[in-house]
Length: 393
Image (cartoon, rainbow, N blue to C red; front, side):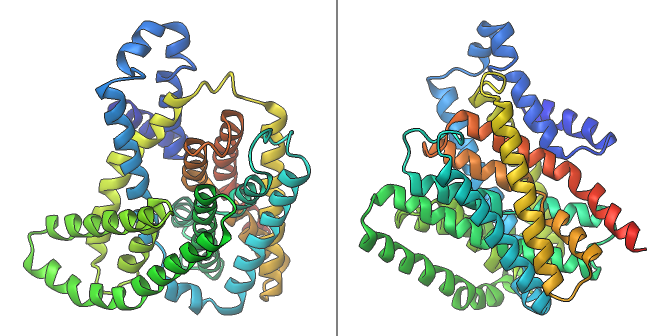
């Protein structure tokens, strides 16, 4: 899985394809879609459904998700969000509220079309609205860097808005998972919300101060880079274990831990890069390859559903973020560039869909639609940003 995904990723780079796309394609080739179809014997031999191999792979992929959200949190810098002021606030708010409302209404009024035959109607609509509103911060950051736009006004607004949208999106998704566990017990849900808000405030205030005091000592006295790597990931798993214990998914705890560590000025850029490289080049490929091993993409590909999800995702996000940017003082060309910049969903959308699929909230057809939407929006983000920036120039 690691060797083939790396080869596919390197080949993809030659034609400017996202790394995640090559990793998913390898999973589809090794999974029931291709290998399982043409050679069931070899597929079952390599990836048995039961036994130690299945248990080990499932454990590795779950750990990978937690670590990937930790790395995503490392890229969130709350000060940057605040510094961008009015433009970032209006862009992030409308860039989340409008696609959320469009997605929620679509799933609420057309539940059968959106593959919700027997699930809780409110929770399903809440999830679909969330899925339509989040962005992929790692993909967006990499796209802007490749275009030499990361430090520009437009780039900073896109990054700040993506940070806020991702934070809110994962909070809402974790709330959905908690509601699934408690049913209609709103008192229990309110208690869980209080727990998670308290945990988040602690980690981003007192916890961050403790991290600021500890990091220089760790980076100076402990072995390099093993000390900061092991202790950072240790905190990631501790926070994930805590949020899991109070009814939320472990990814929320790891995401908040990532924000607390990544927002510290004491964390060396080299240490941040080492953590990022370790996770994205070892654990992320295993997760994205495993997606193709879980289901048959051909059997679960519904063209009408894929098209509808894609259109709703693009229209909601681009219009919402563009209007927000315009209200923030930018012209329409800059606003549309920001809208298409935030439209990249990438890995975050796929992780969100995978967790929802594992929890039984969505079915295979909806998951495939979300994966296709994530890949297409990521592919078309940079060309449309260039289009509007070039028109302005």
